[in-house]
Length: 376
Image 1 (cartoon, one colour):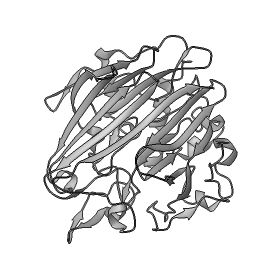
Image 2 (image 1 turned 45 degrees about the vertical axis):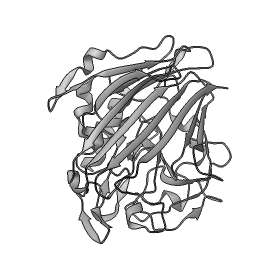
Image 3 (image 1 turned 90 degrees about the vertical axis):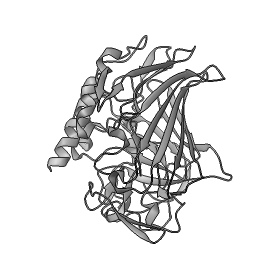
């Protein structure tokens, strides 16, 4: 109950800091509120903008998306990402999920254990009996080295680098991770990940941004019309660890193959919601070929904003929050955000039939996820 209450307070802080209607020109956060030094490393806020006015702010603490301003149907700009106005807000442990990069292994590892090349590794358990998002101190609580630049297409970008030492959170091998955020001319936020290691390890990276396409983040995402390009998902046990099965979404409340509002399906009488207070499911991205393919689309009728998600990852986690209070229609933060986390499957190191999460010396981990914005 204590953890549930903490999560609820964190979510309330997210919504409260963003409860003002977000219209007109982007109301950017003050960069000075992010200037600090943590563990001897400078923290800053970086602003990326294209000629159309789309603007995204990134901090190198946790490689975190702080806000993202995109055009609405009426020509105003709306912030579609829930974030905080100062770096101090991100020091609260419950707040580190918002907009940050998760690793070394995003999502869950069962019982905090996996075996690699015959050796068992034991990790910190921080989510029931399991390890979640890299352990006690994941990538979301690290200061990354930042290099802002303009790429060869003229897109404003920032490259963030973090070196995870051998044994950090008991993962093997020194790992060098780079994440590049770019705001493209077509109103796309591109996230490109690369990583290399000096010893075999397991790796799964994602960004945990919370999205709300309304012009006021106190408005529920129940009205968002969702499409997920997936025919299957990975059922789980009561601790949200996959059973190993790939099950069909057909006939379930997880079936978003055709557009449907979140509110029309969530929390129905469906076994998919056992152990959950909403969506927290890994979908198997439908693909006919490797590479970046459409994974999901979200549309908010009131603003006309469409967010399309494309990725080269095997899965995408659709998350509407765990808090019981977030499911209460009388709550001011009733179902106030969604996450669409492009990633490998949960607990892949312990499932030989899942896509491999192993990275070896001489190999390069590559991942691309695109969040594109348009109006309808």
